[in-house]
Image 1 (tube, helix red, strand yellow):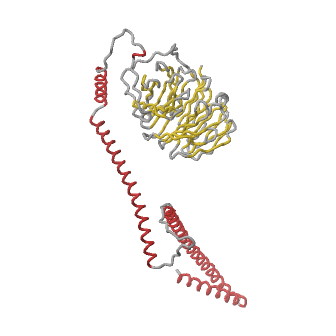
Image 2 (cartoon, rainbow, N blue to C red; image 1 turned 120 degrees about the vertical axis):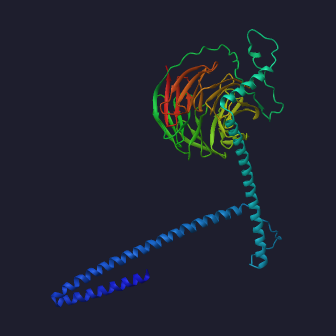
Image 3 (tube, rainbow, N blue to C red; image 1 turned 45 degrees about the horizontal axis):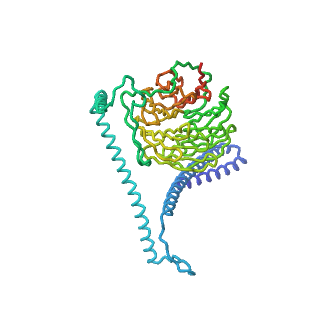
Length: 522
């Protein structure tokens, strides 16, 4: 390239000189003008070629320089990370006599050998830790792969009808072993099922009995007759750009809060459907929101592993709670408004002081991620629905485990507790279960939806409840009998969240397409 540039410059200078001479001659001889014009044109052409080659060479040099700069920056970043990692390792301490100065490195062979030995020890310790972690992960993967293989092999060997027949045979055998002391013309509620034995050690929760094919429902005090319900849509709000995963209403019934995977929380006038505030402090999607009983504090849980507290109705951010190692999936506030409970994908439950924003306690249950939380209206029982399909119960005041309820093979994505100490759980297999928390018995289980049950909401009168599903329907049920009262179709797709207004006249649903529908009972 340098030879080409030298040749072009020489030709350019020669042409320029010839053009100058021809111009001087043209002054004295009028005919010489025809010689000067081509020389001037050739000079301009050579000049343009030279400039183009210079710019091309400059761009190539600039591109090469930028690539080298990026490469050096990446290598420097990797080197910095390695240095920071080495700093976290414990370095050997060198004892120095009091009053003396620490030794200064002189670069002698002995000091270099000592440094190499120390670096070798540090590298061996680091590698051993990493190798141990890799071995543990390989072992867990092998166990998981074996379990999945066994399950798939079992499913491939047996058809659904055969497996169902086996389950029915097992239930019949267990039923035949039950000795009934004395038959009676009408079964009494207290003789329907014996109470489960109480565990001697509270730290080890007792497993609940598997559900039977037919369960006798207990007698409720003065049960009301189920009546059909009719609901109409009053407002349909294009509220968010992503899933509306959580809903909340202030106790006075004036403000509706919606939390979405688009990272925002919005406050609405529940009567008019007018947007009041947009709270946009989370960095990732909002999984759950909860409003304090006094209506002055809103808590939100996010995929960004944080919990934020907001002032209502102004929407001013108050505190940010950190401590979970995974996305925070569920929230619940105690009836007295003093304690906030959070459940995370890291398989832990944390209790926070709502007034001081300080951590009170951590409950660990390494059986799966936490998908849902609920506190009984009397504040005595804390329930957790997990990804393993179980519901774990704790005594809320003492933080002691009570029992584990087994009723589903899929994740329990939504739970609520009624004032009659009845727990309703919605599962990923489309079923809903009703549990008696006083006895730990499964009262009934229904195949309610064709898709996962993503939301459960209890009516304020405690006589009915609503379930929302990914199949795009909202169903309302009679609590004592489990009878279906109403089916509502969500026009905008899967239903992700539900909430009743305090007076029970409004039912709000949030969909996977960001729509919020406000339904009113006729």
